[in-house]
Image (tube, rainbow, N blue to C red; front, side, top):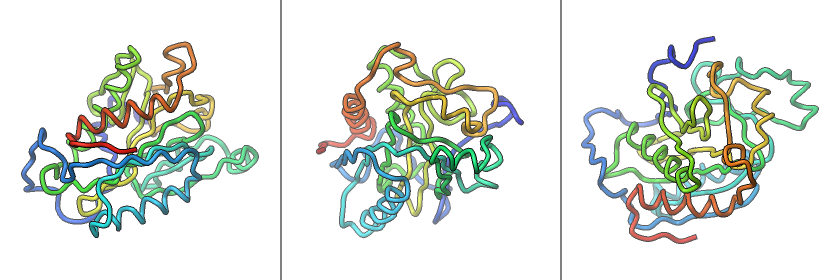
Length: 250
């Protein structure tokens, strides 16, 4: 198993559509839409959320909706990406063991490796049109990281990026994972922030295929319960600010 220092640049993106090169990058310009709609959906089965994203991507492309952020939790599920085997080789538990615990494995269509979703984890799916001013895949991922870093800072936690890796880290432990899909500059999939997640479930996998780093949560770092609704509000506000939306509705 390669260590994180051997992995090189780890941009967890599934790209579909036109060439990413030759695009004008305005890293501090506003996103194409000026209003952000936030949908707080509660607990949504993974397959239902996947179907909803696909529908909303088409709606966004057709101009039927504006930029939209889905905030939700999933029941226990393991998801894999699109590169290689998607991270299936990093699932440590046997199929029978997963079935006994009611944990399904789903392919996603996003970039990245294997990860776990479950109760107490805030999942965010931005459905954004990055045209015309933010057509930069790397900057989009960095901006999502910035949203999560600012959210952690609200709780007094010094989260940061790690060179060559994607996501948000506290020391050698990952607080938030990121895996996105961008199809003709419309985004889907997104991030998973561990709020009060039962971290034992990550022992079923090698999270994101990185064997020599761990995972953590806001509750573990703070030594107390953290209200997920409060985290949702903070994430939505920071995302609105980082992407320079002029208005926000929930």
